[in-house]
Image 1 (tube, chains in turn blue, brown):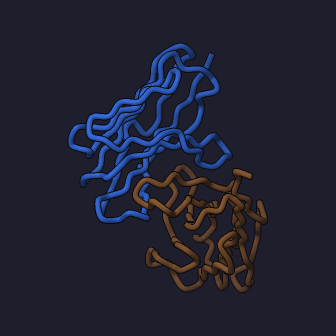
Image 2 (cartoon, helix red, strand yellow):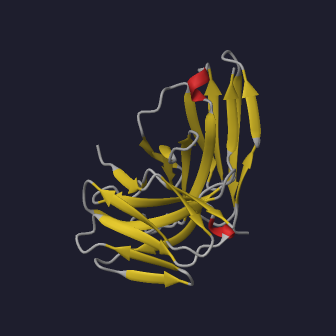
Length: 112
Length: 115
C-alpha cells in the first residue's frame, strides 16, 4: 500500500537544541501537509507544501518538500518546551485527491 | 466559527450497546471525515463525505455506520463493537472545493472505550 514513514520515531532534546523530522513516501505526493498533535490533543494544521523543492518558514520552523516530491522535512531551530508533541506529515498520493495519508509521526520531548 | 466540535468527549460502551458519535462544523465546509487513532499511532482514515455523499469508505467493518444528515453534521453509529475498537475517534472537515490542496480541521475527538 501507499505508506508514509517518518524518522525518528521519538526524539528527546534539551531546550535550545535543534530538531529535525524526516518524512518519506513510497510514491509521489501531490502535496504534503504538516500537523502537530500535543499530548492529549488533536492534530492541528501547520503548513502545506505543493511545489517540488519548495521551502517555507514559520518563525523557528522550516519545512522542505523534496525535488522528487517523495520526501519532506521539518526543522525546528532552538526548541522550546512549547514545541513538545507529535509531528505528523500527511500527503496526498497522486490520484487520491480527497485522501490524506498520515506519516507514522515523530514524538518530540523537550526538557529544560 | 472556525472549529469542529465533537460529542461526547468520552464514551464507554459494552459490546452489545448501540451508540453514536456526533460531529459538527459551521465553517461551510463541504467535506467531512472520520478518522480512528490508536495510542502513539497516526490517524487512520475511515470515511470521507463530500457534499453529503459518502465518497470514501476505507473498508471499515459494518459495525461502524456513518451518516451525514446535512452539510454541517456528521454522525458515526456504533453497534456490536469489539474491545480492539477502543481508540480516539477524530472528525475533520475541509472546504471541499479543491480536494487536492484542502487543509483539514480536526475536532477534539471522542475517546471510546469498549468493554
